[in-house]
Image (cartoon, rainbow, N blue to C red; front, side, top):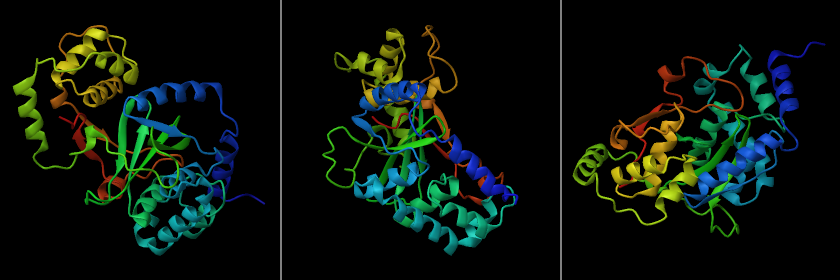
Length: 300
């Protein structure tokens, strides 16, 4: 009997999901940890068994990754209950009911729809940290009091939970406030950033050791370039790291520090990629997962 297309696709992905960590992934995680360490964060590894997104979500909200089945069920139920919203985004002409049935199975990887549904059903926004790249956000709630779930995304195939370095791990993850993102949605923030940049650029207010912290957090080995960026952001380590990481997303950290763009004028479009394949082209038109345009360095 021939397997349905989605079933076959999901089975192949489950076989590809590593049961033990590869050396390459361990090396990437080591560098990733250094990057997050500069922000006062740490990676909490969860089991890589195809349930990693739900395990990470369970760790964030309850402090127990073994509750992943509960969150998978909540997410699938939300998709089923909102069929008219989610059905247009299913790939490969797979029947909606078949897709949901497959997603209910243990070990099926989460995709765009599951991340969006998880945000809605738990009433949380989601921040996804990437190695040497700007963070991704799923923002469905504007209230500043809404919890922000923090996850890390590895090699396009695995999620982990992210917590504060001093989190006691005695329950749900403690709130994380990343200075660079604190005023991300403030309407007048761009103007404030520009004014402060022009008014204070050139003042070297950063503390001794800041250059080393930024270099460790970004992998940039050009101390002169790091010093120049720190001067432009008034010594703000987080802002400097964010700017350099965003820049490295399109080109390597060059030894040439001439003609550096101003951090206040640097933008990044954040768009989520995911475990289960790409969404259809109608995504942007329908506003399912909106692209978010924001300043890379939003902390001053």
